[in-house]
Structures are given as structure tokens and as C-alpha cells.
Amino acid sequence: MNEFDHVIVNSRHNEDHILSISPSRRTFLSTSVGLLGLFSVPSDLLAQSKKPVAWGGLTKAFTFESVPMSQSRDNISLPMGYRWSVVAAWGDPINGKFPHISYDVNESAQKQAMQFGMHHDGCAFFEDANSKTKGLWVVNHEYTDDGLLHPEGMRVWGKEQVTKSQAAHGVTVAHIQKSSTGMWEVVDGPYARRVTGYSPCRVSGPAAGHALMKTAADPQGQLILGTLNNCANGVTPWGTYLTCEENINGYFVKTGEPTKEEARIGINNKGFGYRWQEFDERFNVDKTPNEPNRFGWVVEIDPRNPHAAPTKRTALGRFKHEGAEVTIAKDGRVVVYMGDDQAGEYVYRYVSKKKYLPGNAEHNAQLLDEGTLFVAQFGKEGSGTWVALVHGQDGLTKENGFEDQAYILINARLAADFVKATPMDRAEWVTVHPKTKEVYVALTNNALRGDRFPVDDANPRAKNSFGHIVRWRPQDFDAASKNFYWEIFTLAGDPKSSQENLQGNIRGDVFGSPDGLWFDKRGILWTQTDISTSTLGKGPYTGITNNMMFAADPVTKEFRRFLIGPNGCEITGVDMTSDYKTMFINIQHPGETASERSDPKSPKAVSTWPDQEKFSRPRSATIAIWREDGKPVGA
Image 1: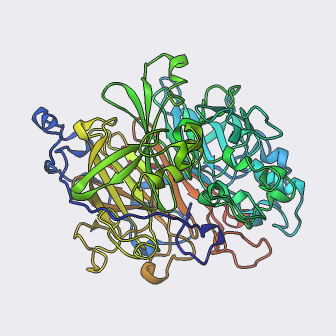
Image 2: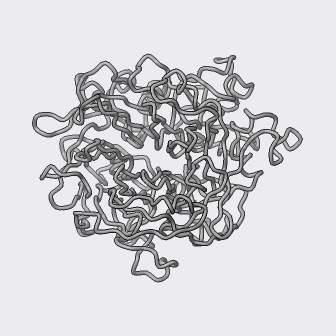
Image 3: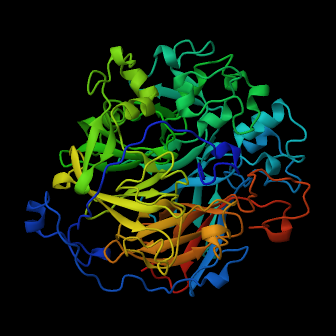
């Protein structure tokens, strides 16, 4: 989801920020390891892990040729020998039985709450035991295009339209399986459910029950209705799903002057035009001033326990969460890496107090409630430090305006400002290499770099329209270490352009605005782009008319184009079966206009994907991708 590409064009992308610093960088060379298990980390290098060491060589990792740019069209383009099919689109029944979306989208809110929601984003496949062809598909629904959601768009507006919009948000849990024809489809099962913008969610961790979390409807501050703007995701070792609330400020409107806390998360008198506050007082900040504090969290869902309420884990901090990448430290503690997706925001890390215990569900269910939230400083000469956001440390005291630990977590951005974290160029997905444990973060773009935010070593380009990817190696290869070594993995752009190729490190195909970032267990880095609709085909993106997906080699830094999406879409969300023979990805908002709200009466359709002329409106969808020869996808 584009939070910031152009300052003027999209009103819900107009976000302000306060603090900026300019640390510098020295490129490090990381440990020798091969993709696809061809190499391992030698023990002598492990002993030297505090020192930069060189990457090793690699034979050719990919067996597919890049999809030509000339194949851009209103459909899915894949390498030769690959096929795809839709698994589930907006409006499909979550159990394969209820009625599908009607041609005129005249569904009630109640029916929408039993169908896949809008704008698929982060996702995960939870395989059934002893099966690679059946499991639970869990997918986020980030936001709604109300022009498409309702028969008359927003021309007719009332309580029913607001409730339907809320029902199209949240998360879907559905059973999917590979049929006898080789296609993946939604089937009935006991775990199918929807989590919506009004589903009851528990609150846990240090902010639970705090005064800032209480409302007249919830005087205990323990139960929140709904999860919103569910962007990227994470998966825990104990089998739960983490959905991340991102641009929550856009649902709220305050007519009066916002407080510093409200302004810092982006609350204002306009919102993003959802108009929920007109028929649901929760989103009128003048009447319910604490309601915004109840959104902007990482929410844990147990996909195999439909009776358990989703849990908002406040120990992980409140900001515009893009994702939550989970890994395990050397001593067994849980580490969660998170990006805050807005221009000039930060990269965060959470470290649990207790250790992960395989098979101990009761113990593991508390691991995201007790721990420490950190924010990153990308320092000089490739050095990096995690600064704890803990009450009483580094000036985070009552005297300096930080009342207690709950206040710090609710207002994590203010705390990160105070300790001088490094403002980044829109930190989006974070992913961990399965073998080296090095960490990669996608920095989509930042038109204000060099203006509001000074150029620095970790963000070296002014008016950074193409974005870049930064990676780091924790000291001693331990995710819980205070220090890390970092480098710029790649500056996105055109490898043939000397202006964009500042470091000479762009290899392979041209790409820009990296967003989705994910390692499969073989070590292939999959990168998905989110160039805004208002930018595609214009300015630096002239000639790039559709968003894409790439496979990248972390050793050679080669990016190879694997997929081109339909018109107006974003490519986002990815997972694979454990045998690598099926890949699942999401196609979000096909046909999106520059305004990000469609006019259902307009005769000019940007996209008719995936139904072509069989349905009146484009639909976000999950697709399955496989090879005709039955071999693993990608390599």
C-alpha cells in the first residue's frame, strides 16, 4: 500500500514528520553463504562474525528467463513454462459455499462478512499435517475502494455502507486445497472465518487497561472492536499469524486542533475520506479521543482456533506497521523486526523476555507480551545500534513527557524521535535470510529526502523515487545483539542509468519502489513493487506501466523479473508450499485510479482483471503459480 509517493496527488498519502538526522555509512561485506544450500557458513567465519567478511561465489540460481517488459498488459505475465489461476478474490465465499459476489455488488454488510474482503495484502499458508496440497490460507484485507464496494459508489452513504466497508476490512481464514484438475480452490472446513473492522479483539501487554486505551464503550481498556488497514504480516514458530495495522489515522477525523500525540500518528480534520465518523462515533475523535490509540498494533490470530479472539500485542509498539518478521535469537528468545511505512519513519525490533519453547502453547502465547521494543540507529562506517524504548532510559522519563511505559508504546514514534532514531525512506517489509540470519528491509521511496529529511549514508539519494534495500548482520549472528553491521544491498532503478546507479550495484532488470520482501527457505529473495498509480509510466518510471515481482540472488545482487501484474495493481504478499511447487501471491487493487477511489459509473475501466467481461468491476485476488513440468518454482 502506498503511504507516500507524491505529496500532492493522493490526499491520504500526505503525511508529516518531524525529526531527521544524517548518520553516515560504510559498506560491509557479509559472510560467505550460497543460495539454495550450495554453501554453508564456515565455522571460522562464525568465530569472526564481528568483522566484515566477503560474500562467496554462486552458480546460476534461476532456471527461468526474465519476463520481457513488452509483455505488460492487463493480465498476469510469467516466464515460459509457468501457469497461474485465481484461488480466491474479493467477494468469493470463505467456505466455498455461500453465494459469490453479485454482478451489481448489491451484497449486504452481513454477506460481505462471509466473503473474502477487499484489497488482499500480507498472507500465509499453513499446511495441514502431512499434506502439501491442503491447508489454511490466511490473508489480510488492507482497505476498501468504496467506489467499487457499493453499487452507487459513495453517492449513497449511510450506516449500511459504513458497516459493509468495515466488513470488507480485516483478515480471512479459509481452507484451500489443490483439486484433481491441479487448480487450487477454497473448500469448506471448520476453521473458516472472517475478522472484520468490528470483530472483538483482546488487548494484551503493557498498554492493556491503560487510561489512554479506555473508552466509554470499553471502560476497562481491554476489548477493541475491529482491526483495520491490515497490511503486511508475520508468522510465529508456534503457528500463529501476525497481521499488522498500518495507516489507521485515515479512518479518524478530528475537527479541533490535534494534540501532539494525535498529530504524530497523522490524525487531522480530513482523514482519507472513508466517512465512517458520520455513522460510527468511534471514528469521531472529538467524541472518542482514545479510540485512535486502540489501532496501529500488531494483532496475533490463531488460525486453527476460530473461537479465540485476535489479540492486539501492545508490547510491540504502536505505529504504522508494515510487517512483523519473526526470528529466534541464539538464546531462544523471540525477535520481531518491524518497519514503519511512512517517509522519514523508523525500523523497530522487539525482543521477548522469555524463550520460545517448542510445543508449549500456553507459554508461547505470552511471548509477545513481555519484552523490549527497540528502534534502529544506522550509524557511521556501517555500524548500527538498537536503542531500547524503555521508560527511565535515554531520557524517556516523566520529566521529558513520557509518563510511563504504556505511553511510550502507544506513542512509539515520539519516543523514537526523542532517542534520535534514523529516519528511513519508508521502511516496509523486513525479511530474514534463512541461512545467514542477515536481515533485509525494503525502503520504497521518499520524495522528501534531501528536503525535509537530509541525505545520509543509509538513505543516500535525494528525491529518492526508486527506493532501495538495506541489509544488516547482527553482531555475532545473534538477533538479540545490541549492535549490527549494515550495508545498502541495492539502489533500485535502471542499471543503465549512471545517475541512478550511484554505487554501481544494480544488477539485472530495472525495478523501483520495492515493497514486499520475502526469503523462501532456499534463500531466494522475492521482491514485489508498489509504484503508485499516479507515477506508473511517468517521470522516472516512463516505460514502466505495471508493477512487478522479481527473484533476487543475495550474493550476486541480480534481480530477475518473474512476474508482471495487471493494470493499476500492486503485487503484494507471498508464500509457498513446503515443496516449493506452488507459490501464492496477491494482486491488490487492479484497476486503481490515481485518486484511489473508483467511479462505478465511469465508462473507462483501467482494468477488468481477473474476470474480464464476466463481472462489472476489477477484484483483488490471491493467485497460485506453478510450473508445467511440476518442478519447484523459481529455481
